[in-house]
Length: 118
Image 1: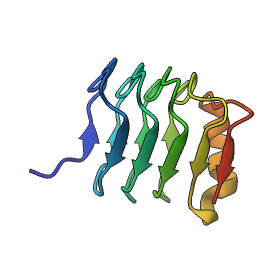
Image 2: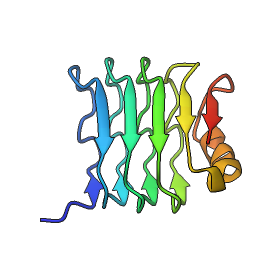
Image 3: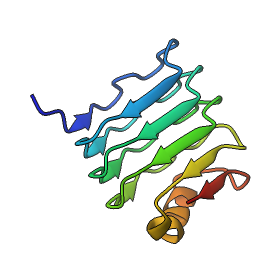
Image 4: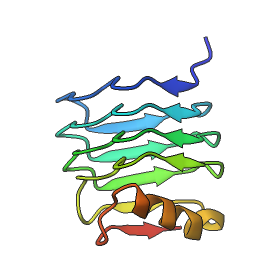
């Protein structure tokens, strides 16, 4: 089977997850997919075809401090997708999309103290 998405609320409230790697081929992360995971510290999105991150996908993951996004076709990040994560979180995005992703991530509830790098 070819997996193309992470279902809404798939890992919501999981108390054991410390890191997540979204493999190649994933196009969609559902709403609340990883919301309220208290130990989640690192997210690596290796998928270059990711188009959507749902509303509140990583909401209230207070220890989430490192996010790497490799996708250059990310079109939509849902409301409050990254609200409530660590205030000093560091995002790494493709250099060609730095400006566009900064705007999109800020709208997604990212704290102003978080850093977005290429």
